[in-house]
Image 1 (cartoon, helix red, strand yellow):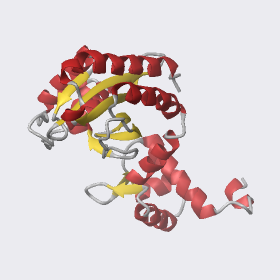
Image 2: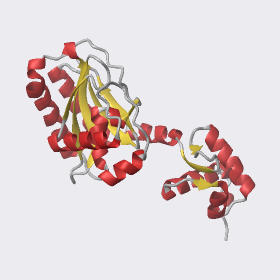
Image 3: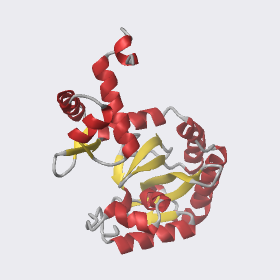
Image 4: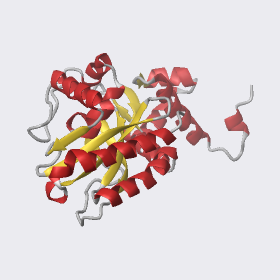
Length: 260
C-alpha cells in the first residue's frame, strides 16, 4: 500500500510523523513509552526516538517522572490558546467585556481551565487608570483563583480529587484552600451562588468578581471577571451595580456561545 506521506513530494515526512505522534498522544490521553509509540505508529524505534527528542526540545511533549513515557507538553497548549483567541468564544466575549469595562470602569477578563491552571484568553482594560497585569496568555493555579474555582465545577468531585491526587495545594494568600476538602467546598459554594466575590484572594488589596460562562446547551465553558485594586471600586455598590453588571454580561455571552 502506498504511503500518502511518502508519495507526495511536497510533504515533509519527518514533520508529518511528528504530527502523527502528537495526534496519537492527544487521542490516548495517557503517557506512552517510545516503544508503545513506535509500535502503534508502525515506525522504527530509532525514528521515534528522534521525533521524541525534537518534540521535547520544542516543548510539545514532556516526559513523566520516570522519563520513559511521554505526554503532550505545554507547547501544544500554547498553540491551542493562540487558536482559541481567534475563535467564537473570544470574538463573542470581546465586545461584551468592552461594554462591561466601560460601564463599571474596571478591567475585565475571560479565562478557560487547562487541567490545574486557568489561562486568560482576553483582557479588556478599565477606565479608572489602573493597569492590570493579567494579560492574554497569563496562567494561574485554578485552585487559588476565583475564576479557577468556578471552572473546576466542570469536574465531578471524584474527578476533582483525581486531578489533584494527594498533593497539598500551594497557597497564594491566606485565603487559598490548601486541602482538597477545602477546595471542594469552595467549588461547591461558587456553583451554588453562581458567582464569586473575592477580596485579596490572589493579591493583597485586590477585589475580583467572577461569574461562569455557559454555552447554549448549559455546559460550563469559561469564566469572566472584573478585578482591580480595592480603591478602584465603590464598595457600597459591590454586590449591586458591579455584580449585576457582571452577571448580565455572563448571560449575554452564554446565550451566544454554540456548543462545538
